[in-house]
Picture: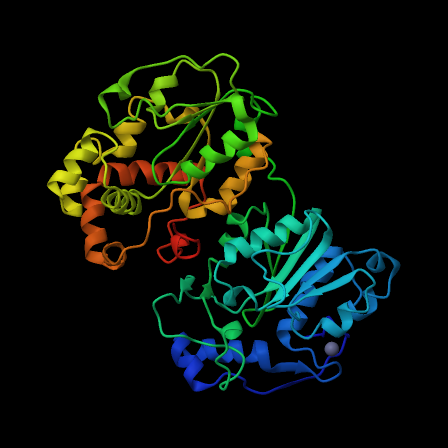
Length: 468
Ligand SMILES: [Zn+2]
């Protein structure tokens, strides 16, 4: 029997809340409409909480380890010690939560969940409810929630989830709004429709565990994630070499976050950085080998990884999907009037199509051969990805113990109409994936090992992050 985890009530009433246009935009089947209606429109007759609130309250009870109802719990001494952040009114729980002395309510638009105005590690509990689908970058929002949580603090939240399909971005689809049939304001605009893979976002945002808590399946689900360092062997192996790596080789693979690292390393470390841009792998000088320079902490630049193969160092790089990378380099090279090197000179003279460019020497296997040929990729301690740049820069900052900032973007390529056409046309992408097949396979292997890619066809994280 269903019991209200807010007040303990046991009788409920239901009314449908979805309207036909939303059901149509969302492409819900009748049974999906029924469980979303139940989630939003079934209420406790005693306290008015709907199933969504009850699911969230239940996740909170699990997180704090209490058998009391949420209403009873907030009066306890334990609860009164907690620092709790509620982001937007979390379902109908605000009247109960606001009884806590350590409660803060952060509301859109004065607070943006992408940039919470709080110090690191200052809350025990962060809560939101049906908010994540409305933010442009849910990964970033989740990473922000983790940032403000104390060690072992817990994030509990709900999102409308269609459990029989995968998450999809609504980018490029007609606008769809929650709230009510009359609302059309941007805070109700839906960016992401979550599906069965919703838990992957939590892990991608840096949490090490996620639980799905069901009061009633599938109508009343809530997720909780504890802010604990990733245990076991996932990260401790590479980091075990040194707590703060003293010798770092950083391969600047083009158009994949390397320029912002370059300027931040230079600012933060000054003379301890050796910038090596004189051996661009696309030039004849690229094959020369070198020793790790004395007295330096980081060597960073455009060079073949093999150039410093003799160095016993902490190896890092950032990569990007070869098709997006090619399009980005193509647009960037076009935008420059003076050639940076011989191949770029040829490019400016010949004005190749994107497909001809993909066949250029050095370009077709830019990743698997030009930059990383002959090198044992298992030697890399850290590989970040442009697609999850924000989270990965933070991970790198932790690993190097340097205050690197993900928000600094350098050397952005301007978005031309031609580039947008290249990026948007699926037939162009497919043909480029064929032409770059070796690099795509190389990239996917590394992404599987170093990033979090589950091969879900709709989990297109490039749609969720800012793309320079
Ligand atoms: Zn109740």
